[in-house]
Image: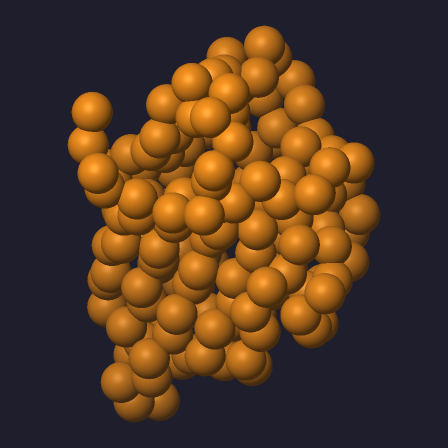
Length: 154
């Protein structure tokens, strides 16, 4: 058992912070960014615009017994700088894990992107037994950054 409660990866991407943010704030594009293999598609088709927005994703994974949906509650939003959400099984309040995408412009065509998967606020012991955190590995997060880099060139 580890005391680790988050994983952070980062990568320099050859695109403006505006272009990177445009991709991240569009849930329709999240399937092509997903390094975990769990995301199947966006349910709502609405762009993320502010803290408090909720977008629903179609998912599939053995940890949930197959197909399921998540409601993602936007918890951080600063145009071209930060987008974050707390994930919950559809119809439920978020149980404590969060995804944070931080963008640090390095110039007109370069952005340092930091992706953090944080489960430090998960307190439900039953849930902690059911889901072995981290559910998404550091390698899968790095794959997501690679997919984001590829999406900015397409």
